[in-house]
Amino acid sequence: QVQLVESGGGSVQAGGSLRLSCAASVRTGTSHCIGWFRQAPGKEREVVAIIYTGGGAAYPDNSLRDRFTISHDSAKNTVSLQMSSLKPEDTATYYCAEHPAPHDSTWPCRISSSDFISWGQGTQVTVSS
Image 1 (cartoon, rainbow, N blue to C red):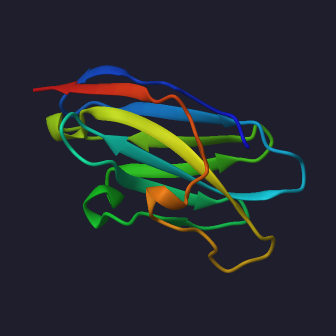
Image 2 (image 1 turned 30 degrees about the vertical axis):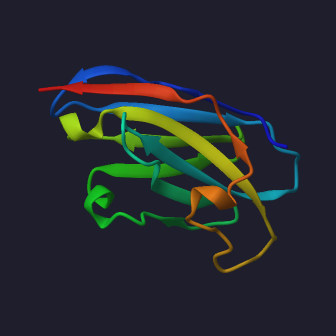
């Protein structure tokens, strides 16, 4: 399994920004799909964004696309989630997760949390009004 460690959570006022990072212990030469998910108290876990280390990203929830950006730094084996114009409803624990992927695929990533194998411990994001 891949080890994932999130960082960058915190408290921010509505309209503010945060950048979350996910450090992944991956082997050189392997490809992966890494996603950010979030879970608010009393709600189901939902997907925020997914990136394929071979190229490409997806935002299954179109309402987040304009405010959230996922990126991958291959040199640092880090996946980041830049969040801007934060709203109180963005308050949640944010998790990064991974599943293996083949090389040179058009888009091999799943969007269901149940398809992701490795998970980080989560980082809390709190947005106050």
